[in-house]
Image (cartoon, rainbow, N blue to C red; front, top):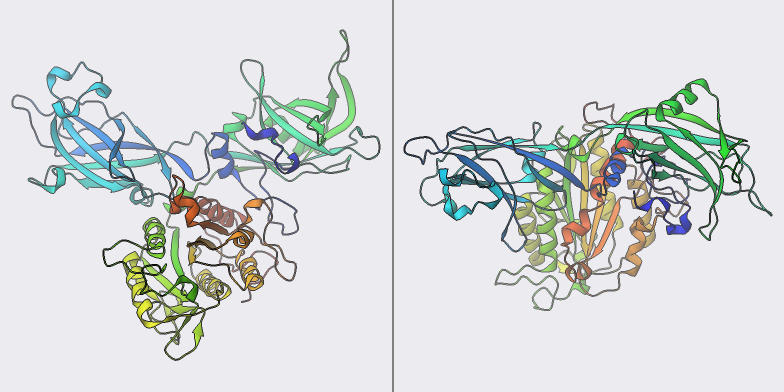
Length: 608
């Protein structure tokens, strides 16, 4: 598990097995739903929730026959196009003899990365008979007869309900014959189990290990392995100064505990800042045993280790109770996407004067005649290229803020594709602004370039208006459709001047199916912007003291991204699948079972 005993933030946080409840009053933590099973499943495999292991199954039909006496002996090779345009081979199938309609058994493994456009290239070869005894990995492709190639983006497959795509095979570079057969690719998640167990644990009558106060207990749960040792799989948060603690729910996946009859060691420690935590007591139970404890409403006594050479374990007064127990199903981001859930993309562009005169090559808004993209265009293209695969109609609201219209008024939320005075109309049951919706990423780029000609850069830099407008659309959507989740991209060159209003808007929006991605361009000091991004574990708090239900913001300064090896889209979207899943979990919205529409979290209403 690696990180189970981390002392980050004082070592008092839960690690590896807790799904935080949606309690705005809860201190610390990034917030989460009642079921963090998906995130936990991936982290137990050493993976970020963003990365999903995918297995590709390949078959083909009506391949060309390149052999004279017999039929072709086809093999498929799968590659991915890297950022520099070169191909990196992912794997090869086996060779199937004499078959123009092969169904290959060998699978190709790839890590699905939500934040990256992953272009896959498929090549099919006829392997010459004299090479049949050579392992496929050692075959030189230039020595084999080329049968055809096809390509697709991995996102195209995973968004299909059956996660399958059939491609037409053609010659390289589309030269020559184009009807070279078909290749069918099936993408499946390599998930060994989708079962998770959520438990609420409490203790009574713990022994006090402190002199001047009470113990600060936490639990560590470990799995016993076949070799006889144990591997820690999670620990709870620390409850300060309490001998009868109750902890936030622990959520363990089947990947962690293997099966319900596998022994688990549960140890209770008194937390010390030095890291020398004092063992209060331990016990050994299976998940099945813990389920029985819950049903019978009885506790299990802790024991202390033997003391001395002939010492025996001592049964302690302290007991462990299972206050709550529930078995849950794991739902991944792809489970939702392949069942009709969508990400609806929105963009807002900073038109304040600090960007510089768009006619000057030094301006962040300068449109280079050579076609070189400016920072704003680059962010729109990189993020839009990913999000568009998850939006069926590809009709995106596009706004600008901080510009002066010819009428002389400054607008902090105007339509890139229309006039700032447009009226609201209903389009596809959503309340959009007339003429604010553009067609595809190309439409955003065109509207952005046009707006630079029609508006004068002004200021100040205010986010509150565009966040509220995006929230209005999300509220309206919930009246008709729970399968839409909105993603607002804000691109800005400076620190906002309405921090309080923006925080209030984001806290209110945290109840809605909405995430906000912010890209900082230029050389401004963006230190204050980090406040909006709750990566430090402290959720946003409004001017009235209300704490955000969940973290919905990701902020990235573009200059930091470009100084490293990661793209802006990777840095921006790494948290988005987790934010999406947190929203769905906190409302118990499941891929196959959509509950009745509701516009806010229990106990909260949304008011702009």
